[in-house]
Length: 85
Image (cartoon, rainbow, N blue to C red; front, side):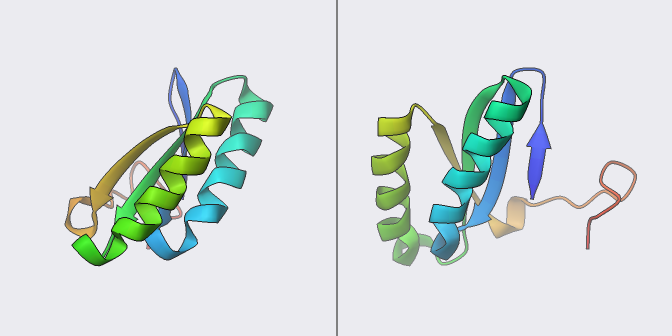
C-alpha cells in the first residue's frame, strides 16, 4: 500500500516485509520530491519488534521517517482508495 500526502511519500508494509517498505518509500520520495516515510503494520505485537528494530536501524541511516500501526487500525474506505480489498 502506498499513499502520497502534501508532505510525505508513505509506504505501508507488514512487519516481515520491512525491507520492501524502505525501497518503495525511497522510490516514491525520489519520484515526488517528498519525504520518504515507512509505516510498519505490526500484526503480532511484541513478536514483530525485531522487524521494527531492523527497519528503524536502516531508515535512520537513510533519513526515512518511521511509524507503526496495528492491523485493527486499518480503515478501508472504497471511496478513497479504489484498490482497497
